[in-house]
Length: 213
Ligand code: ATP
Image (cartoon, rainbow, N blue to C red; front, side, top):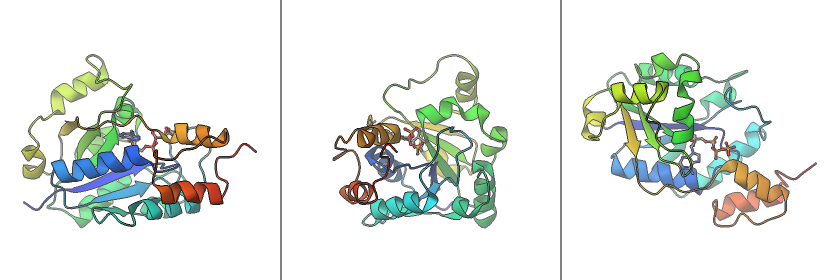
């Protein structure tokens, strides 16, 4: 079977080293063909106002400029209204009927996974690869724990041998960085250097993003 491709959805408001390091690490450890970062048009899971699509996309482009393993899939930005992961994944599956697809997410996202639109269908299209995130332990009871009992795989080779249906927990290098921390620091005129790529940091400063109005 061909190597799996990875998809990493998010608001990326802004993209930071937590996103980038976990994606790169997963691409290498799981031997993925490549990973596409998929910025949401408007996250159905988040209440806060997003920065414009144009700014978030511009920052993503700066972040992956020198990283051939990561590219950007802009399709959800062109959807009117909320974008749903399941729709993006189904289109990708149609385009790649014989390739494993890995959808990447952080542990906080897995914990709300059963609230996602048509979440049951997502595992019939792809595997989930979940990064540990400091402060978000693996649940040992409840709906997500049951989901893990049913779908978790420990052996990464399974992700190469099957098209969909498994959940793999990725353990290495969790970085305690979040976009909300960056927005908060910026709004208080504190530096965000080393939390995100310098070029993205410079873009935020230049365009005065995340300032209190
Ligand atoms: P916010 O602080 O605004 O909630 P965020 O930092 O969680 O944002 P998102 O764009 O919402 O960033 O996240 C996109 C995906 O990246 C989610 O699946 C999230 O769990 C994951 N993610 C975010 N930060 C990290 C990190 N430091 N390590 C691993 N995964 C992360």
